[in-house]
Length: 334
Image (cartoon, rainbow, N blue to C red; front, side, top):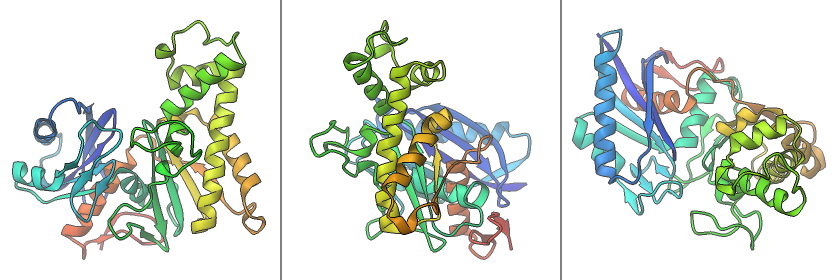
């Protein structure tokens, strides 16, 4: 019977999870809606039952050895989600304590973007890199930083909150309570807000103009942009401009080799990547120009955060067995 870790990627809209072996194979996966209208106690009880169902339905006989969770504002030092802005659970959510009590298994918690960074390091676009930043763009904007081959956590475990750095001091109100945060401009919701602003102000003949604002989502904006809609194209240009400027600031702080962009909005492809690269180059100091890559995640069929959270817990349980930092980028048994 093979041992597996359940890797869990808890997002603002959906929670994805799968069973991962010590050699990094994702045996099976599933997802459920993240219903944060429920109490978090009820949600995590439901999640654990879903994990048990996954184990029982697996084609391979497996034993669940632990649960690794990646979540917005997940603190790997304390095991607590600290007031995540894109979840409705306020205050501190004691994920490790709760799931350990329910399951009787080892449990680890990390920031969802940090888990994605480990996933990219081991299995994706960051293989062989030592200094890079993963930007996850979906409901919000998260970031995971790897410097000198090590995940950067910071004193309290919250390093890498680029989504809540300020773009405009008098800008859009963020769900975190601040004003003008990056994720209010660079996220699925931010893109839609920008598109609606362009339609009202400059493009009343947009293909989206006949829709109620509540009917417009990032997929509709992407489809309209691909069809040549000027308002939607301008919305992507503006989104890439804001992102490129903030990435240039990040280069000045960290001097990474690359930015790896993942998440739902990255599926827009060059609509997002072209302006991001353009404005990044425009705002870089001269000695950085031409040296910073902006690339999409290479992980499509498997989920980097699921694999990353599993790898982190495997490394805690069997550090002599897991090699997380070899240059080949593989998650291997020694």
